Length: 282
Image (cartoon, rainbow, N blue to C red; front, side, top):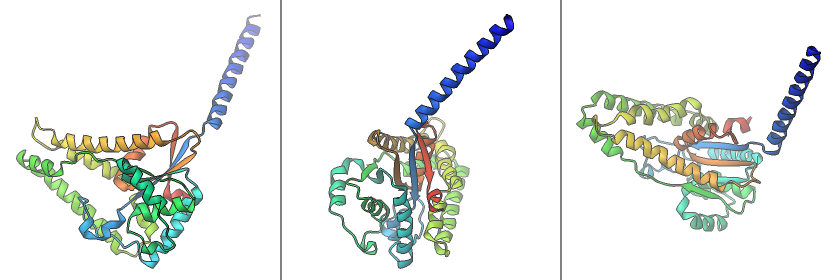
């Protein structure tokens, strides 16, 4: 009799567990994860050194050359095949109306005559391919007191930290200038900017170098790092709030440093899943 009761209890438990598993699987099918294609890039317009506002000064390639235009078409065609429901670009969130006007009035049959800017060369191109009515800006600026950080590091006599920073910047500038002076394809260069190792190094500068800056009771370094996190969190929030229930996949185009942060945030989001550029180029 006891054995019979045990068997009944086991079967009842197994049946309940199976129903719960089936329900979870059903919900997962009904609510699939939002696929997020991350397109981290160098800023195309930095080809013009006068417009390069980045800390790292790199002589980037001209995306308007025949070779790069041909490759950009191939890359953006593959992204178009990914078929994102919404496209987000690094354009001021506060100027969405201006962006709407720019996009609605934009027509191009020859992108080599268009601005050297990833928003146009990638974002607009894909959006027009897919006949999207809108493209979404999410950029939002916060403080970035780099000058104050270095001054406070000198005041605190953090000469070893300054040396490490100088070596790190020199290393990045050297390796990236070598990259652009090589014969690598545009896709190979973009894959470098979307590499997990590079993303980790990018975030490492804020967390493990800048964060230490300043005297014992001065937190200029931590403030700079927190402002960087705040900027990216705000931009991520803008993207989150734009998502609708019908959206199945999106594309985020941004400087590689922002994409490194977005990847971290999305990894904590159980409802979103990242897709890498290389994945759709296979």
